[in-house]
Amino acid sequence: KDIQHQLQVGQFDAVWVHGWSWLCSLQAIIAAKRLGLPVLLRGESNGLTDPANQLKKRFKLAFLNWLFERVDCFLYVGSLNQRFYREHGISEEKLFSFPYAVDNLFFQHRVEIAHAQRENLRRALKLEPGRPVILYAAKLIDVKRPQDLLAAYKKISDDGEVPKPYLLFVGDGTLRRELELEASATGWDSIRFLGFRNQSEIPAIYDLCDVFVLPSRFEPWGLSINEVMNAAIAVVVSDVVGCAPDLVEDGQNG
Image (cartoon, rainbow, N blue to C red; front, side):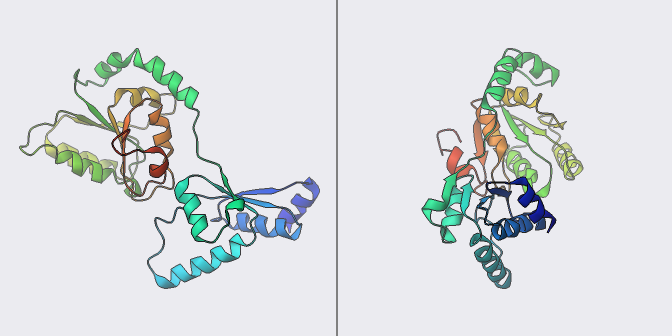
């Protein structure tokens, strides 16, 4: 009732809702329909992680059918999200492209500034000149699968010798200690953990690397790919990173 009252006194033309995971989002949609206000919905669902349990699957389908009947316009973030809506029977005239984006000019400008100081940063991080850099920049948590990247990196060496590329982990999280122990057990000095870096620092890290890897087992989009592409860096993503069909061209940029 409170949401409905706010919509009434606010004299709004439409209600824009982000996702449907929160009860308040559903309350806003219901209130808007009672007042005859159009509802615009922007979600991230891409259909890559539908529940395996048949009961949950049927419940989810019933819920989405109920929800989508109350939505007037669907703002899709990418091609997978668009396909998801189409598969749920949403007509083309209700679909509008509203992609994820970053401040490209900001990142390009910061990368340009950082490029002139690249060798200074390499020296500060004690990285030898001429050796490639593989970068991971995300939370060190299971859903992001940093352990898969470390396992793949270890396979670069089939004779126990230190791989030529460096592997840099930027970020923090519950897996950090476990990853550090595994990296230490190799005896190599080529694996580095740089901890959390804020947005003003990260463009310089992007400029430093040759390959950026996002190996997540679920990623609705992956804004870091938008960011790092401003540094003209090759990217490697898993097939469940939502931005892959829109941003990554196999053999071209990743």
